[in-house]
Amino acid sequence: HAALLEALAAQGITVTAIRIGDDDANLALLQDIAQRTGGAFHHVENALALPELMLRDATSAMARLAQGGPLY
Image (cartoon, rainbow, N blue to C red):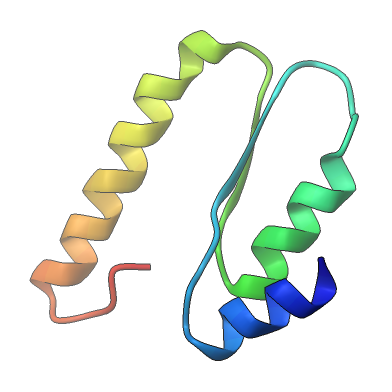
């Protein structure tokens, strides 16, 4: 996956990864994907937390856009 991540980052494409669950399976991989592409990483234990997380991220992105900044 390293070549794909490098290509995404070179094109300015960010990847935000969300890990759902209370274990640590694939945790390092998802953190690495987000970090290499300049995206965010979130770890939630329960899928019920996703709507709040998505609203928070969308609100933050809209505030950056309103100030003339990038979406990510």
